[in-house]
Length: 371
Ligand SMILES: Nc1ncnc2c1ncn2[C@@H]1O[C@H](COP(=O)(O)OP(=O)(O)OP(=O)(O)O)[C@@H](O)[C@H]1O
Ligand SMILES: [Mg+2]
Image (cartoon, rainbow, N blue to C red; front, side, top):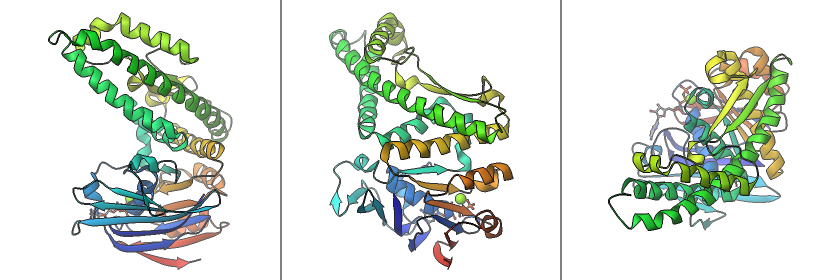
């Protein structure tokens, strides 16, 4: 999969900018605050449909404008695809694929596959379980179209069920309908758990191998799916355990007014030499673990989709030591990559054997340095 062209209008600090990308390596150099992450973000939005930052959609539109657009031309499975996103203040965003408007913008996920790696990704290790769930959710959504649909439904079901639990003793009719919501919860939750289990098994296989290489075969990485339903294996077994959990703990759920069991409580444990990396890993070990996860993500997408995703490396090389930098650069050969940085000297030495295009970003304008 190759992104050929990107056109952004009134997006963040860009008025109107266009870049024709190389199918191998693309380096964007610019000083702090000139728009490098904004550019990455625009590609990410064309892939996932929302930002990786904390902003609302209105905030993506240039401060002085009401409307913004992102247009991406890509080549995938022998097809030319044009993705267009129109953002308008206080309106729902519109997504067009080859000129046809999507009914649900979530349908765009999986068309442009990406793997993004930023210094902020350390939160996957250091942060709360929410961060790790988000990480696997985005990845699975990119390769299994049904997964995003299940997640959205599950979210609605848990909030509806929570409402019933909260009012269980005050509204008599809730006694009758709770079992319907239990069925929804268990059926959807089981499917989500099985998808997650399958994905995490793959992630574990690839990431363990990569980590072992990075550490010179001295350390081992393990990734464990932690579900409060119990062991996730066969569908019927998971359902049985799930029903058991909610039946045995129903009073507690009513008391707390919330659903206590299911994939919305999942965590993913990342361990180095049997110890949880979050608590015992050094900064370097944590960075290596993230690097291994990201490279594993690329392999899984290639395996599932048949083509490599676009790799977005936002300011990440400056965070890695020379050994890890070289490892990463060595392993992105053959994958279309965008790298941002502030220092072109360092990057050009690192990527001296690459077929590449170098751009500069200056106050929201893109310029081409060389081919
Ligand atoms: N909606 C917006 N309209 C106009 N400008 C915006 C908008 N949102 C953010 N900006 C500006 O974009 C700039 C930040 O851009 P960005 O984060 O891409 O910088 P960067 O080149 O990645 O910098 P760094 O090297 O520090 O990471 C800031 O100056 C910010 O004020
Ligand atoms: Mg940045």
